[in-house]
Image (cartoon, rainbow, N blue to C red; front, side, top):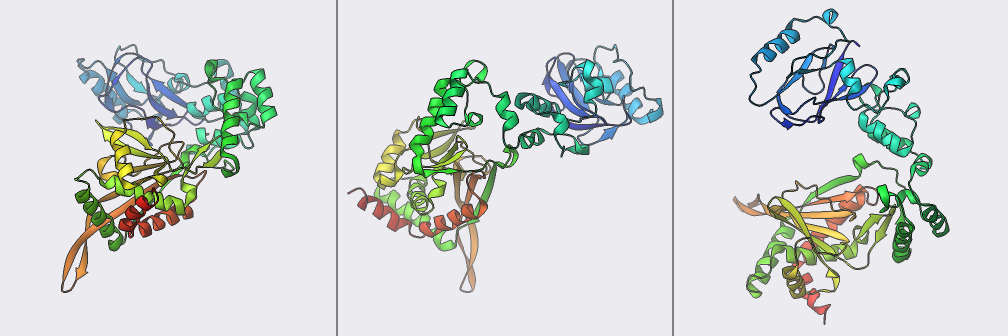
Length: 434
């Protein structure tokens, strides 16, 4: 081994660690391994940053008790880093007997730190460079790593590479844990076992699991859109963001203030947003659904999850059948919601100024989640001066297995068109319930 590269640190400097905790992922020319803590302590120093390559034997950090004097270790580590040449390093050196060792990028350490390959198979597995996660995933799916093309650093195999190699699902099918009755029932009902979540021992699939999957497919009926699952988990969700025209933003805020006066402050901006979003969903129904059992399942009823933040955690409550409710009924329902109330949503909505999800709001199995932010302002020319107008933005996070970018953009455009008619939509919500 001529060089070792620190691919990733799992802990930061001054983090408490326990014996056996994974500290870093290290790559050599022929393997990738994880460096584990050999004792409890604190990661006092990190010498080699992610992406840097160093000769074998180079200290990459110091693990020691919080109250231990590490000045000698620091001096020793810095001397090795600054003074040792590559020729002086012994790639097969035994670990130091010092109780608070500096973690080193040694071949032995890398190979023994989380690699799924047995020592007896070392010669065979060194030809395959794969991360520990990739090896674990390959074992789960029954994938031969020798047949997988790596896309990671130095052509190493990543977890995504393993999942992509599953291809038509043949290898995965062989690794599925399912009872004989479950397999027979799946064949009778035409259920793909790779899409079924197991509830049996060790997550095995039972006959009841298959029945539940078959029932979900039957309930969705003609509204189920079969999607080819070509995308990997790493790019499952994407986000589209748009800024409303000044007229749309003003209409939305003016309507909110007007109805707040009429309803003695009971109405919030999220209530009006529910009315507007419901109208947009009626026009672009692909957003109103879930992705489950490898299908995009559309929903007729608009069961919208409202997201709130409490003590730094996000909670949801579902307002059912929004399309059938007047604004008053929406307000009444929202006020009765409990945090994390039961009910499967078909869409998700949040006021971005009330949450801290950074626009990437994901609420599976919903295929889309929408965030509004009406707290900004922008300067608009007005005569010889400028006028400050509301700045309203919307971010849509969508599941790329069911929704593409053009559909997401079209939904946001329609949403703002509906926002310009917010007051009319509020009135129409009452007519629809008469």
